[in-house]
Amino acid sequence: MTTDELASLTQAVLWASFFVSMAFGALVQRTGFCTMGAVADVVTMGEWTRMRQWGLAAGVAMVGFALLAWSGLVRPDGTLYASSRWMWLSALVGGGIFGLGMVLSSGCASKALVRVGGGNLKALVVVLVVGIAGFATLKGLTAVWRTQTVDRVVQEFTTPATLPAWAAQAWPAGGSGAQLVLGLLLGGALLAWALAPRDFRSRNNLLAGCGIGAAIVAMWWVSGHLGFVAEHPATLEETYLATNSTRAEALSFVSPIAYTLDWLMFYSDRNKLLTVGIVSVFGVIAGSAVVAIARRTFRWEGFGSTGDLGHHLVGGVLMGVGGVTAMGCSIGQGISGVSTLSATSFVAVAAMIAGAVAGLKYQAWRLEREA
Image (cartoon, rainbow, N blue to C red; front, side):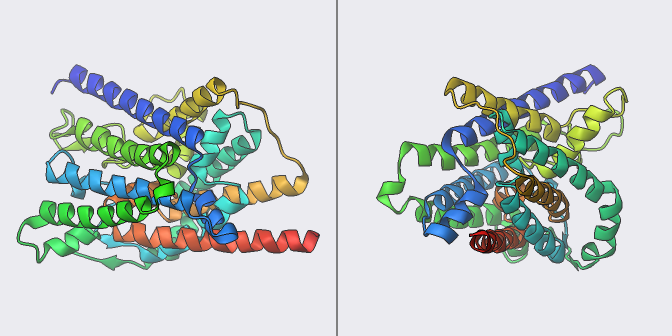
């Protein structure tokens, strides 16, 4: 592959990522898909509709990723979540912090981007704070704290810390067979649970669950297949084009928001290049804005009080720190990571839900005290 061909392919990967993330933003704006909202509905009202949307999305993503892996289009061991180090404590602590933060911020990082597209200035503040706190946890002060504490508690394996990799050690068909069987079983179970109630099978719910899940699968194909180069002309090594991690990535938003701020602030530095994550941030905002304007729901919204501002600032910091520590947000670990059946992702998701429940309990206590 020549240098010109590589540059052309990189452009194709970036544009494809932008349009997939634009579809993601449009779907979330159109359907109201929200991880924090799903947990809040269950805790406060016993309503499971949005949680079933999330389960449907995760199930579609699991099945789709399993089929991509089985067909050889994507290599599971080349993904961001295929580390041989099971960082369960980082996922547990980071996930809990992130879950609490997304409640204080009225939604997770992806939801904040969607709200920015709808004219919400509160969400813009949250996005900026998430990016600053996230970058500090990648390379700054909180990064030092992270690497010297929770990141030191790991379980090392000889294979990737994923359910299929562990099962493949005793699986006659090998890794791709284990990925397919487990993906179909676990993903199919989520699909069956989500679709069980007849009243759930509305157009909006199906669009939310199937659409979000399909967007994750599409991103795996873009990053893991379209962007895969077996021999880079400069290094003569295999690589995944336009990714910050140099591995296959699907949608995730905390670290990408941090890298987006870095790219904007140092735009004139030729070493700062666009990546899949950065264009995904812009794509989500653009997709959300298109739907909001088309449906005439776009409106400017600001903070109602200093207390409201304070909670959103704290929530943004917690999401930035927690999302990087947990190695993903409620979409990055909750759907993208879970679709690969990563053990770390399952811990992170459970911790995020627990953190969100704690945040909701705090919000209820605060409202009762003020009343």
